[in-house]
Image 1 (spheres, rainbow, N blue to C red):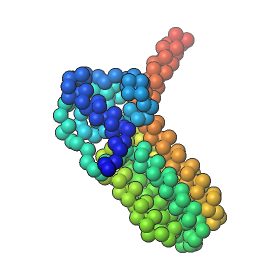
Image 2: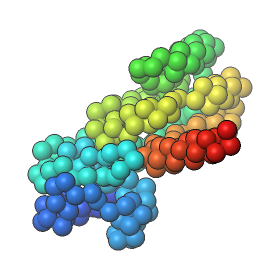
Image 3: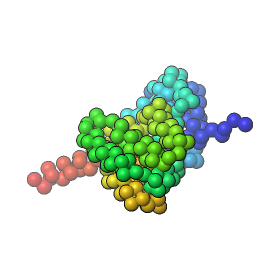
Image 4: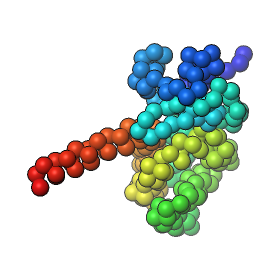
Length: 247
């Protein structure tokens, strides 16, 4: 039996059909996110993921402060089997890596803890680099998977990070997040390290769960950055008008 289509993929396919049949012609702006959510009876995060899938396919363009516009009626860059959304991927990471951290806490070595300390410093350094990548972040999570002493779990975590790089949908949303200045939080990684140093599986599980829950929140924020930017410009405009009146 074939797998059930993921919900956001189903919404993206229905929007593609509307684009191809001319309901939303090339150059047209798609309805607002909230209107699409009502139309398809899904949550707004599902609509955001569907829009990202369309963006990856080259069908639409997201214009900050303006909306989502149809670029083409033909899927020039169709998504491949490797495509997975950043939100789905992070949900999977939350489930697996929380338990990996708990397992690692019971058997991590002092040498591995020193390596993690160094990686936290590297994460901090990468955050201060404008075009910095997140290689230290990946190395931090893979080092914890190594400390779990389970090759199947290590391969799973390694696969998660490979998908983050190779899935165009996941890569696009993470890129949007970084452009919104959302970067790996050093304090969250430090909390994970502290729990591992204490050899406390429960604390390590909760620290990793808390960290990846915040990653999920940041990805949702990144999909809303257009609205945030628009609101910020509106506030700045009102502040400027007020300063002219009161000067």
